Length: 581
Image (tube, rainbow, N blue to C red; front, side):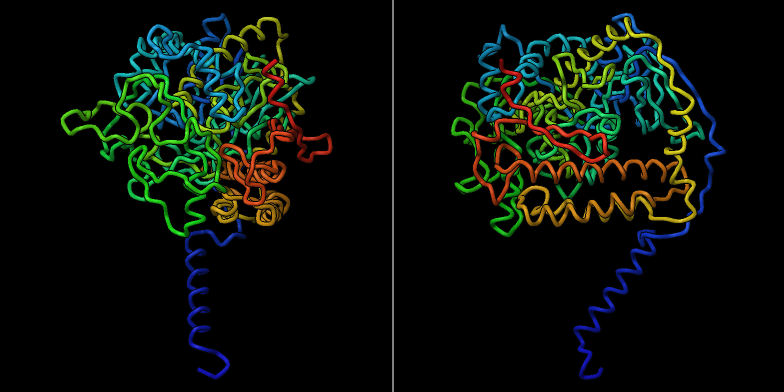
């Protein structure tokens, strides 16, 4: 080597070259020639008509379809995955049941306690609705056999098949369509057949879940905020993007379902009772950031307690590892490992709700359950677009607020909101005039769906997704936030939005699905960064290093996002008090 080229420089250059070669071998080199295996001309078009279109086949979708049908509507369900086996539904093993005859809480006490834990961020109307209707939904699930198996497809299929509700699986809906200011239907394509779908509907219920930037694999592998972004694109208001889900994950067997004590088994679902807490925000992320080393994960309650007064705030009432002292007694206190002889056998489900959730991990980029999604304008799960409803994690109901407050309430909320939305959408459809998607909209939407297939060359979805993950997932961007770094990340995300997305390519139906999912993730990342910059305080699962305290004078409000007439992203505050009067 010469004196001007050191051994360290040589090794660094060689390593970089090897890295680029590895990326190229994985098809992640970015720009490349497109060699489509199919073309848009090969695709057949299938047009369907229905009163109520339910998009999504999880818990919310199940109850939306069943209750819309029982209310007299003609119903069609479309799912990107399999009924009961996609999205977050198979991940959840605990479902909350509020029984006033046995609970230590009255309904009013429960709602008030959730509000105290959520630091005012919950919507008390949806909190009450969830608890009040939980028992009826759980009783129906018992009747359908939901608690008899760790897999949900058979139990979900029983009420659907009894009612002969058509279910179209493995179809990705990419567009919601409006005509004359109200919903007219949706469009998408089959991932298995060369078929596009245009579904004319009087009302649409989004049960599409939430999403993240890096799903952790089975059973969560397809959540990319599809419904939220589709609705945003036609003018729906969206909320909750600054909050963060804080479920820890495991590097080993990350996608397996574990009980709360570290044993893996096929866990059947079970009910949980009142157990209010302030959990799974960004406390562990803050500890990792300040300590400079990974935080040890263990059974529920065994993680180290937050002691830094400058870190995320937890109300004193909910600060200790044992949950709220007035909790209903259906399980051992949190963090107390039961004796070996009293631990559940294979197929049983103790401790309810927490096991599979805590050990399984979560998707980076997801907010607290029920805290993000479409903004409801009433207690019927209706959006600001006439005829468009949402339920479950697709609805920003703030049922539990911006922190996890009640074990098992997410699955319950999906069931309850699905039922409410189904009944409301069916009632809307009764008085709505038949809708028809115009040919101009069909032609325009078809071109947008298949644009990546038509490009001679461009960026691969995998390249853009990996780039986005590198920008958004670092702890100091997504979880422990400050203005300078978020603005830097936003500059990268806007570059992806403006330059890379318009040049994305796809060679087959699988890559076409990835292209649309990638576009949805990029727009969601823009929302998340801009909302996080706007909220100049720390509260619940949103933490700013540069604004570490709560600001009750200026920030007792949710942030809503909508698309302006000029196509740019707009923001507004919605006071918490609007739902408390």
